[in-house]
Image (spheres, rainbow, N blue to C red):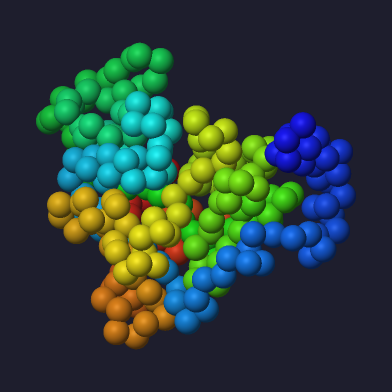
Length: 257
């Protein structure tokens, strides 16, 4: 029996006790992998600039070992249309990795809906990714510490520690987590952590042709993204959950789910 199977069996019998007592006595990856407390990474999405090209999704999959044809992704783009009657339609065909090549809306199970252009009142695109919550529920429920938050605010998943219990996937109120189809562990966006600590942009930011996606350091007073967040009208997704998301949006409509 390998280490992962052993831990998985042990957790099934003791997870409730561990969660009740806390994880202070358990060794965790977070204990040895620490970020920089002087930094706090934040993300800025400008929905006015997003054109739904899907370049960000392609770049993310290639950079982060997510099988291109798998129907899961660390980031995706949603298309919204509001009709004159007040109906709201949203879809994200294949996570929008191939962009939006048709005006037909996917309704699921191979069904589509055509919206005549004269009935469209408003249309826009919204990129989605892990919100890197300041109060992440996924961290709280992980029974082995495989999901943890660094001092720089980024929530990470250690693939070697994850036992695939799925608690974190169920706990995320934004639906940002999934089971990796090849590694069979929990996965999600981590702001391309391996890149940002080398002073490189995340793959999706680098691939975006319009500058709709940006990353910054909110603790750096000279940081351009931080300045926008502090001085312009920005919004967070579903603030009612109280998780304090660190992904901020410009032009986030109330129609966004």
